[in-house]
Length: 176
Image (cartoon, rainbow, N blue to C red; front, side, top):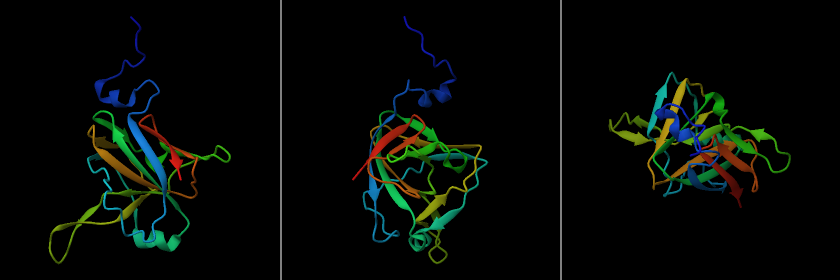
């Protein structure tokens, strides 16, 4: 019987996949006419555990004013109940460019954000992007198997043929 090299505590098992990803993923360039209008079928992950986290957000209006980023929409379905972590400055998310093999990290990630409306005192969704000024000791995003999720990542440049990866959780080539 062949022994596995993955003799590690149970809570790390989701990251040990013998070089395979934990998802089926597809990605494409997302070029909205309005950064504040999101696709109706967008499902941003919101089951998160954060320890010693700090982040800065930027609004969709501010992203539109900058106009210098390319958004990549990744739609994926987790093969099992699983997780991935975010590292400080998104260093575990990389875009490998087709042109020169350079690795870029995202400037920002569209993330689920809610706040209390001062008039109605109810929770409302807010469109904002978590920037790469992100710092953490531990930030874990959890996914249920069989559900489709989306990530929207902003890079200084991205194009069809580039490869996006998040640790061994996800790897996808950007389609047109």
